[in-house]
Amino acid sequence: MKIFEIPDGLLIKELNCFDLDLTLDCGQAFRWRKNDAGCWHGVAFGKALDICQTGEGLMLFHVSADEFEDIWRSYFDLDRDYSGLCDTFCADSNLKSAIGLFPGIRVLRQEPWETLCSFIISQNNNIPRIKGIVERLCADFGEPLISDDFTFPCAEKIAKLSIEDLAPVRAGFRSKYIIDAAQKVANGKVSLSGLNSKPINEARNELIRIKGVGAKVAECTLLYGCGRSEAFPVDVWVKRVMSELYPDGLPDCAEGFQGIAQQYLFHWRRQQ
DNA sequence: AGCCAGGGTCTGC
DNA sequence: GCAGACCATGGC
Image (tube, rainbow, N blue to C red; front, side, top):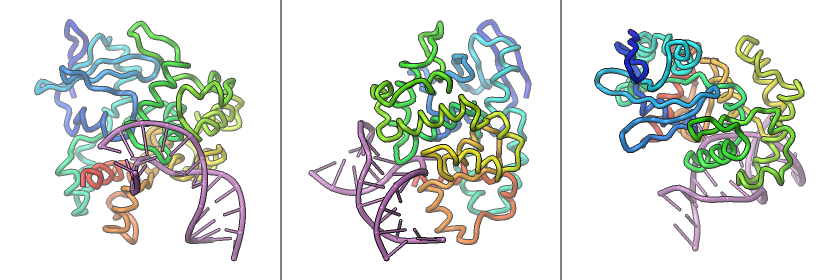
């Protein structure tokens, strides 16, 4: 990976196993949209970003080298050796097929609270609608940014709201879960900051104390929001893959990185 | 129109 | 411990 400062921002070259479209549109993050020029726009860690991928590399617009180091390098998981990881996964023929069709999917490192809240919203829901609910939540309760965007509202802000306050967001029965999560995070009954380092089962048990958080939402929070690559979310699609191809569990080559393997399998199975 | 969605809770056996 | 109803909403 090589980083170049250009007049408009930064150019990242020599990235292997990085496909921006797949990464931002594979159901792990819900705040990115692609414009007519093929460029993605989104908000994470309180910053708006315009980013696109061309034959030249990855272009991050209006981003300083400092901001890249502080936020985006980690967010896009640029320091992980996906090439080596995929070589390991390819010991399994199904994973090899999935990776062959959709190389370049990366698991983002998102903010814990946003991830937790987003995946509470995801329950029994479809991706287009999840995006709509998250967008309204941010527009109604996030902090405005210069770019006409909004930050993801912090837990302390949501914790003070009532179910009626959340009605315009149209989250349905999930509203009470969002508020319970916000209150437990805001008052310290659940500590998100420790989840990246605790033994994974302790982290799981802490998360499922929140109403509306079961195994699936907990695994998604740990994988996408706490950098726990061994977390393994099983949704309806992955459940199909497991029953059809892995009745005895994932192969050994996925050990320690079950969540990343899951991301390839999820996308593979969902694209029929 | 009806089925389904990156599920979880609550109830009843 | 486990199956089944139920939950709000809207995309397809």
